[in-house]
Length: 164
Image 1 (cartoon, rainbow, N blue to C red):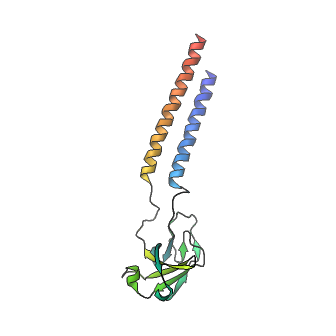
Image 2: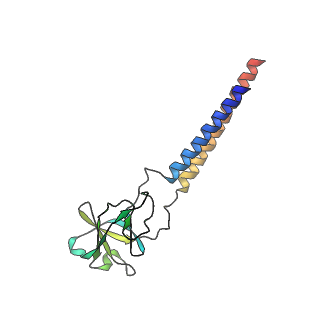
């Protein structure tokens, strides 16, 4: 009976560890792509792949002054970015239609030697949660629990048969 309790505790702890790993991996997935975001004068901007040229620049708007604590966090302070290097230059655009915005300043960012258009982002205060991945992991967890229960039942059955 004592061995059964040890096995049961081991299986429960193993399953709890799997739950923790699955949930942590869903929230903080290191392989998930993180978009470069920065905060400027009351708005969060994201950098697109749309090219801009030196002639599109009107004047310097500022620079990235600090980074967020985590790369998946949304910047909330002027001059803050999630993954842009500190010192990255921000520029006003000559033509605000370049960034398709009348409510916000048109911004251009110099990144890796080239100029990119930055657009206002309408995201919430936290990164999008991937519910599809979570559902798949819950299904996987249920399968693991079922297999663990079956293994435990078979081992108990074998011990009961041997003791008879």
